Each structure stands twice: as structure tokens, then as C-alpha cells.
Image 1: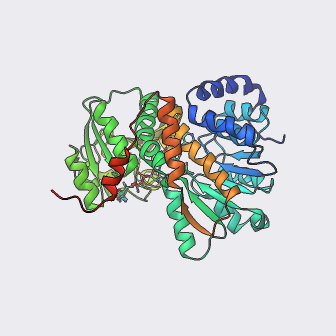
Image 2: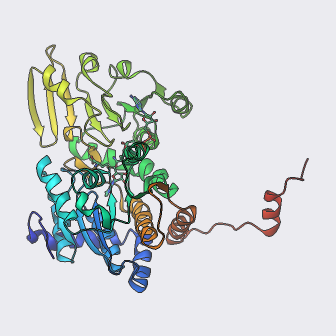
Image 3: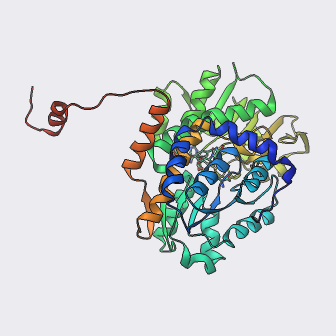
Length: 417
Ligand SMILES: NC(=O)c1ccc[n+]([C@@H]2O[C@H](COP(=O)([O-])OP(=O)(O)OC[C@H]3O[C@@H](n4cnc5c(N)ncnc54)[C@H](O)[C@@H]3O)[C@@H](O)[C@H]2O)c1
Ligand SMILES: N[C@@H](CCSC[C@H]1O[C@@H](n2cnc3c(=O)[nH]cnc32)[C@H](O)[C@@H]1O)C(=O)O
């Protein structure tokens, strides 16, 4: 199997990590067993661009069990776990990636996956899909379609389709209920603080935590911050979400006001320049900034670089910026998504990626079985229900079924008071 990883010596350690997460991914394991019998991907090559860590390798092994030839690279130059990629290569996956790639190496390894001429793409952020459309048109014809993992990737692909630029169907995995309600909310909520606390070793209780963006990720981050004893402040641009945040019990204010109070600030908007120059002028001394949104553009690092009179690396993933009035501001993980790119970032818990990757596996199967039109498609409700039921079963939870009388009542319109 071709591969380009940091060191194959790390494979035994990576295999143990994969074994551990497999014990906590029961839905994906059930799908893997069915794939082993039915081989839905016989003769199919799947190329993925996802965070390379043990849970993702387990998705690769699930697709491989279904008969696929699998080639994988990372979707972020800082999030790869080198023991996991070594283990993946030792288990027959074509692995390309290592931690701390340069931007050039990042795009090189995407190209290496595309050299396998995949039929199906599984992307996180749409970098691989864009690369195919712009620079690797030689592989376009063979592609049946792609699955996209995250909110921002789907926004970008919808814009691409609106411009008539998209040339194959894409399934919006992020928009499945079993994805965004759990991954974006509970996954990001927990993994963001797991990483911030791991890197900084500071107390959250009693701190002012500012959460920028009250979408699915922001809701999860705010909820966990409150659970850890923080005073939570939310900033938003959407009046309905701002109102929701207020009624969920948080203070809501403009970001320029909020930064004056922030001990910790986390962005999760998928937007650019959420905190920038003017905000840094009034930001509270000692504020620790982290981003959990898609790209490293939410916290404007260029402004920080220009405004700081002195800079120091306190730890590999903590940068200190000293302002001209003596205030010290801190940026974690270079403003890249902290839950994966942070030194101690492990990504979402296994039980959460179990749901997201189950939807990825079923969506890839759908692309093979059902030809689709060019466009961005929702995952079928039936697949969502199937994944939710499998998860409940694995958790030992039973729920009720509607009785015939209840179905009739719900469908009728003649029952009055
Ligand atoms: N870190 C992770 O593991 C992880 C997981 C899932 C999604 N994401 C990424 O996180 C980002 C958010 O995802 P989501 O699912 O919560 O999206 P979402 O669309 O549900 O929420 C984004 C929110 O940000 C708000 N927003 C936009 N511009 C803003 C601004 N200038 N100031 C304040 N708020 C603003 C929007 O109004 C919206 O409510 C996306 O980039 C997504 O790709 C990261
Ligand atoms: N290319 C982007 C990707 C956005 S990451 C956001 C996605 O990461 C996914 N994610 C979060 N934790 C994990 C994990 O541990 N393994 C694999 N994917 C994860 C999650 O499903 C979410 O939609 C970047 O700059 O990093």
C-alpha cells in the first residue's frame, strides 16, 4: 500500500488507540459488519480529506470492510495524529499526511489521494472538492459524488452550485440531524474545553467566557462553559439566535463590548474577522482567545502581529502578544480550530464521531447505489432514523412506538375539542 506518514514505528501505539475508539463507536461497528457481508464498495475507490486521527481511521476501515480501496489525507495541516496514520497504513489504508504540514505539503497530500482516481470523495471543508474542480480536472469524470462533513464546507458548495460551478452531486452530511445536533453541539462543546483546559491548565469556574456565534457549535460551547462554572457572554449577528441566547440565560452584547470582559473568548461562526484590530485595543488583559470555527480567519492574527510590540511562544500552541500599553493577549493553536489543532486537541468524543461517521458511511453507500443529480443534497430522513435507532439500541434505550389509534389521530383533521 502506498503511504507517506511520519514514522511506521508509531503503528503499534496507533492501533491500540484505534481499538479503544472502536469500543465506543457501536453504530459504525454495526455498519462495518453489514459492509463485510454485503461489500457495497467492491471495485470502488474512496478518497477522503478528514482530520486524521483514530476515529477517522476507523471510518476508513469501515469503508475498506465494504470492499473499498481507501486513500486518506487530513483536512487541516495541524490536526493529524502520526500514530493513527501509521496504524492506518499498517492496516492497508493508503495514508498521506503528518502533523504540522506546511500549506504546500497539505495540498501535495490531497493530490496524492487524487492520484488514486477515486469514485467517491469524503471531504471536510471542501478543500479536496475545490482542488478537483480547479486543478485536478483529470479525475473529475470518474467521480460519482462526494459527502461533505461540515457547515462551512456546505455553505461553500452551495455557493459553488449557485454559480453553476459544481460538477458532481454532494451529500450534505452536516445537515443530518444525527450530525449537527450532536457533533456540532455536544462534540464541539466538550472537545473545545477539553483542548483549552489541556493546553492552558487554567480554571474555568468564575471566568467570563465570551462565545462568538450562537449556532450549533456556539450553543454547545456556551452550555459547557456554563456547566464548568463560567459566566457566559454571547455575541451574535442574528437577532433570533441572540434572543435565544438571552433566554437560555446568557448575557448578550456586541463583540467590541464583550472583549472588555473576556477572560476566555471562543469563536464559532464560520465567518471572518470576528475579533480584530479595534477589539484588541480594548480587550481585557490576559484574555485567552481560541477558535472552534472552520478556518483560522475568525481571530485576525495579522492584526495581532502588527499591534504587538513583543511576541513570545509560551507553549507550542500558546502565543503571547504584548500590546503597547502592557496588556498581554493570548492566542491558542494559531487560531485554527482548537479542538483538533491544539497540542492536546483530540477532536470530538468517539461516541459523537460514531454518529457523524455512520452518516458518512451510509451516504457514501447511497452515492454508489443511487445516481443523483448535480447539486447539494440532504441526507435521507430514513438514514438519520436508522442511525438514531442503532445508537439508542447500543445505549440500551428503548422508546415507544405509535399505536394505530395514535397514527390515525395524528393524521386526522376532524377531531375538535
Ligand atoms: N470545531 C469543530 O469540530 C467544528 C464542528 C462543527 C462545525 N464546525 C465549524 O464551526 C463553524 C460554526 O458551525 P455551526 O454549525 O455552529 O454553524 P451555524 O451556522 O449553526 O452557526 C454560526 C453562527 O454564527 C453567527 N455569526 C455569523 N457571523 C457572526 C459575527 N460576525 N458575529 C457573531 N456571530 C456571527 C451566525 O449568525 C450563526 O448563528 C463552521 O465554520 C463549522 O464548519 C467546527
Ligand atoms: N478543513 C477544516 C475543517 C473543519 S473541521 C469541522 C469538522 O471536524 C469534524 N471533527 C470534529 N472532531 C473530529 C474528530 O475527532 N475526528 C474527525 N473529525 C472531527 C466535525 O465533524 C466538524 O464538522 C479545518 O480547517 O480544519
